[in-house]
Length: 230
Image (cartoon, rainbow, N blue to C red):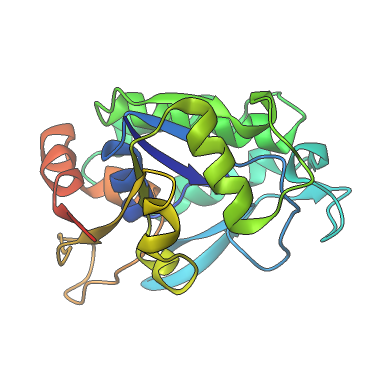
């Protein structure tokens, strides 16, 4: 069974969804501490020809507080308005706007659950059938940290392969996983480019940008543009 574990990110880039697509089960790592300045409550969209941050307000956020104890702020309508103004002329705007409206205006107050819901709904739109679960719902030794905690989750869920994002190469060694009978692999994304408003492509933007400029069929092709490497 292929497993991935990642912190919940707000409208993450395509590579995050490729990771979800690559596994049988995806664990949303909601019981680790919130990281300020990361991607948990913000991402970048194309706005007036530039990559600009789209930030969800949060309450009670601190590096000493688990993500699942942080609350969603009250700027959802402003976020939706920003997205609408930025992408009103995008080819798929009318197709995806109802989805984004539902996701962004979700009344769920818990940040982890709010983002988990958005990941599930966007994954469904993209045709991803991966199973989701919250790390906080898994019985485990929560005193464990880092690699030990990841391996404990893998063992608890019966994973035979642990799939990670490319950034995990600096954190994990295949030997550490093999000692537990688990194969470690990484998602290697192909070069991604598609037509945006301007002539110059801006890479690495939120999944919002991808679904605004690409049909569901085109998204499926982009989603599959990766390989797994040890």
